[in-house]
Length: 602
Image 1 (tube, one colour):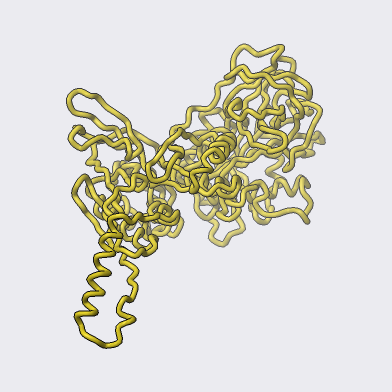
Image 2 (tube, rainbow, N blue to C red):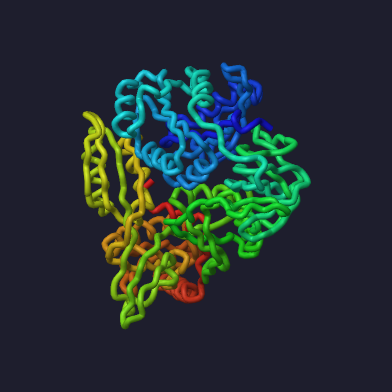
């Protein structure tokens, strides 16, 4: 492999939709890693969901060979990262395995919320930051304005910012040179004992777990015995190599390299992202500092549609956890849906992506319950505090003295044109404005304190639609504040369905219950008897819808005749329906659970 002085490890960070994946495409095309016939846009986004939605979900690594102006051959290890706030954990892992970052700013939109938070992440890890202004070919590009923002908002040297057009390939040659000149080579000693950080993994059905590594010290080669420091499990390396879109085997990997190893690891739970890999015979003394523990903010239960598929779902979740370290789950069960898992997610988009990946990659048919956040409940009679995220764990109303819910500090950067509409939206979501700063004549930054539960459902979508996509949103979880909490039950035919219960803010309960009942009325197939759908808090019914009965025409055989004959038949039918309602069971289709999830107006 190359000497460390000829290696450059860097990632691309930016706000969502600023052109990271397109720039990665151009770098890969320029390096001739793929011929034009096989090239496709978003080449590093290898999941169908990423292509359909036009977003990056997983950070992907690729090794690019480059001959610089000084005549030397360099190895550039690029990690493309996501831009959406739900996947900032992926970004933090990518940053840990690099020495430099290309900070991409859209020439038409300027500095946005995720641009700032990703830059601070990179600064925390002492990365060398190279600012880039992308989309300079667009008619709406405002290069002097964006340079001013880089200088003022980011505190970086605007004159050193490179101008590129990722779509047309303008400025890519200058960018290659800047990466070589401005990003420092990795420090590390190939002769020291092996120390490598696991920053990602994926599962290959034929070869087991493929571990993605960044080597900080030492070397790793085929036949070598390695050990995982967290659980001391030992494996023999079967293959090692680098990512050149496909996995390309090499003789060895040494300090500074980014690559992969295959060691016949079939026990999925042995591998943990953030763990340190070392030599079994000559181990290092100190593990590398891993990644900060991920804190899920949205909780939902997941169940197989057919309860016999539980074991399959369990192994699918294990394999998915390998590839997405931010997924947290534990066993759960429900009277309506059987055995399943209670999962923690980083946001609602993360939940949707996990659902789609389970269905597409692992062929699992699953049902998710309505998402919730973690509440803090104070109990009476000195019983102390409990934390709950599952409506099934909600204690009786009489035992609760008070409830608290998590709040966030939301930062919204928007053009001044949309200020009024965004303020109205934040007020509706119980937000309290704490600060407002005019960044320049056209843009304003607003800081709001608001409950996390209000942001879960449709906040992000509505923010994007009222600002025509120009407003950007980022948030940090701050602390817990007192709230009026209630458990909303959904009753079908007088029986509570535990999987449809939700924890809601009391004042919003009526609206939420009404929407859920309306959705269920549309989804539940009609039976031979009337089905009442009710929303209730405790014993109080707050909303009701009815699925009307299918009515067999019992009068069809009466040709004229006395009215008493017809009345007798109708009375008999009425009695039968009453009896049926008492014993009748309502089957809930999968679409009904999904409809409840989407309680926003679509």
